[in-house]
Figure 1: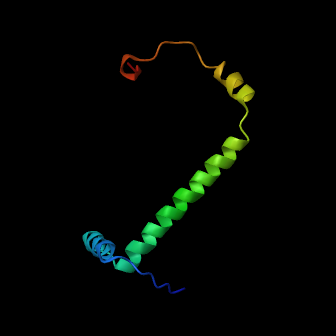
Figure 2: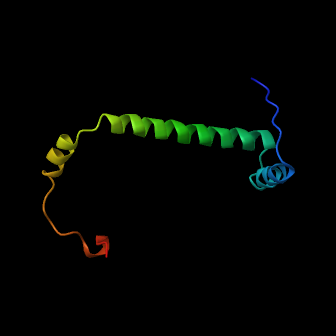
Length: 79
């Protein structure tokens, strides 16, 4: 396991301490979770971008044409 020293402004450090206490976890656990969330978000964005780059409008329209032409339910209408 690696050790990392990070300098934080006092206000951020205080907030981290407060939220970690509320979650009943250590500051290290809280920061580790926050980093994991950020990495996951970045990885997901990259995945979506890569998938989007292979998209085909023609294929999309072909699939869309197979959908039945029915009115949406009343509770699913956008006004």
